[in-house]
Image 1 (cartoon, rainbow over the protein chains, first blue to last red):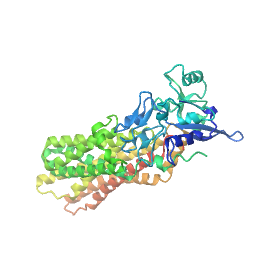
Image 2: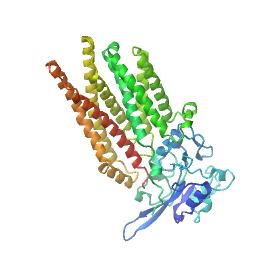
Image 3: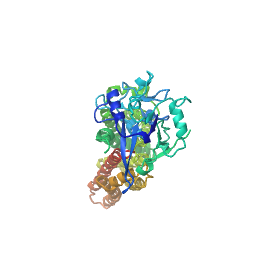
Image 4: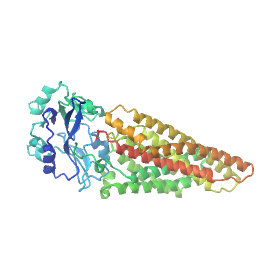
Length: 194
Length: 305
């Protein structure tokens, strides 16, 4: 997934769409938009950072799961087998992105699944489909002709084209474009490599 | 202006039960390990009573800790999956096997105290148990306070607590016979010195940990601020208590032990409450260390709030 933060208006439509699509209970979120205050008077600003599971290539949440409930599919989607989860919450501690939470009703670990049920049917995740500004782009990075591949290639060397916390070695698969404010707000980020 | 995503329901992962598991499980496992070491050093036959006390502590404490952890799970009925289809990259899996093995071997050790094989295997299992407690937290990459030398800290603290337990057992026991008296005296010396020295080492590790946390290269400056407020705010009090108690009482246990032996040699009645009190405070500081470490990790998530 690519998230072009320059196009994000912070409307939280993606947040609501995700909740509606996946029946996410009150108080927890699979995705949402964080707002950050930037700049100093007389030039204050506000930045928006859509937050979502990064569906890492090397997901620490999968390695630490004792029962194998956390799994990574061949297409890269990281998800939780709810019937195998014992609720130990180890994955919550292992995730450097804070993407996981305990589902208050089912009492198992939960997270963004890139709307597996939708992408398996050939349609985009709910947050991508709903985004008014076209901030979120979803596709197959292994397809050289996909929109996500072409967009990432075009923006690869632009300032603010980054992934979050590359130092953890997780190889996150959510790429941010235009996120030049991250250092100012204290979020570690790095250039896209590989 | 942010949505209320970050709240207790998400970042508070574990409660006091995990603290108690790590404390009593670590103490019991370390007691077994120390008892076996002392038995090897001073003669296997002379360490029988000490090993018995250690096996009892190991079996009860590790079992109780395991039950506490199981009670933390939201779906404990699925726990068999850990043993039947567990992922071995997870510390939880090999920790679970080690804890079960430690419990079984400690129970066997109670009935077969003279068996070197049982003692060796129990000690090996207990090494894994103590290592597991620290490794479990160290594997939590999403919590900046935990990967910081927590394995070493928990090892040192567990050994101090295990030694404190053995010192208490030794102080309360009444050996008979000259040979047993000598052996008992040697074991008491070892237990007290171990509790004292490891207590002092714990102080050093805790202090170093505090300094390291305050010097973290900022994943975000807000994380630095959170850590700084943690260290100088409300959690500093129990941390200081644990540090001071461990350090002071660790030394006190050693000094008191020496005084007690000199008093007995001079024919005077020797108080046992002083070293007993010292050992109890070493145990309490071991609990506080784990409480503060676990709370610190959960209070400060990696991403800024």
